Image (cartoon, rainbow, N blue to C red):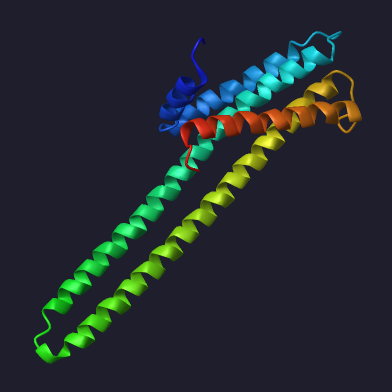
Length: 196
């Protein structure tokens, strides 16, 4: 597909709004990666092998970059909801204080409003912290799973070619794949979300 990376990332992100459709594409990409690796000639040199590992790993990383963008969107929605909730609560309670029938209690009303403002600020800060922690944990799990997918892909391919899954030869390509998985993931995520 002759499409620039930014446009492709944006289109794929749009597709990801339908989790089932995105899941089908992700599965197809994994199958394609296996097909690419399987097509490496038996007498291929290091450059050919490395290029195929890099291509496959970067593509898988790009998909996970899109998944990470979804996690960041969820974080934004949660923090925005908390801010809106606290604003609504603060506004409704301060409106209630305006109807205080005893005029000489205005210092109490001011104190109550200040207490409410501090509470709303602290509550919002706590919700933001929770949302950030949850997003960080989800992203870490997505990243780890992607790294393991690359590892399994390369080790299964190496094994099919007669190399031990824990040999130095296999580890060399596993590490190359994992580095480029990270590159593909970070590049896509940076394209979609420069503010992360």
